Length: 118
Image 1 (cartoon, one colour):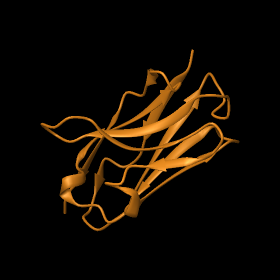
Image 2 (cartoon, rainbow, N blue to C red):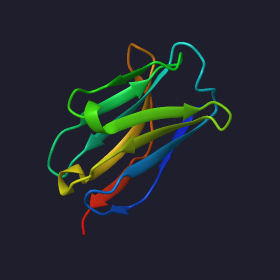
Image 3 (cartoon, rainbow, N blue to C red):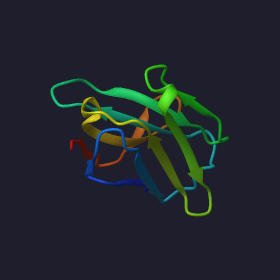
Image 4 (tube, rainbow, N blue to C red):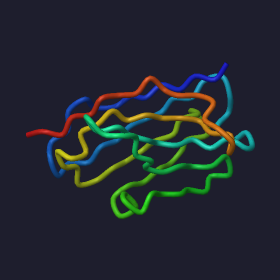
């Protein structure tokens, strides 16, 4: 059974960068045809798709975030990382790592709360 566990800072100061890690257990992140994605949910709002890294290593970013994010992976530690730069209070949200098989989401991480505040 695949499990996803997000980790990272709970509090980030404005203008700083955020780095979140999604530790994947139970399956290799290189196995076809699973994509690993980052989403977030700001308080009182719906889910926002941030970006994805495919089993092949190709990356796809939302236009909303493309200019200030980077998604990478470490195939040795089986982890996926989201880096988001120039954080603002509007980036306060619960951040989720999910796995998608191109048809549906089959696994969700529990989510991690990130607050941007000075």
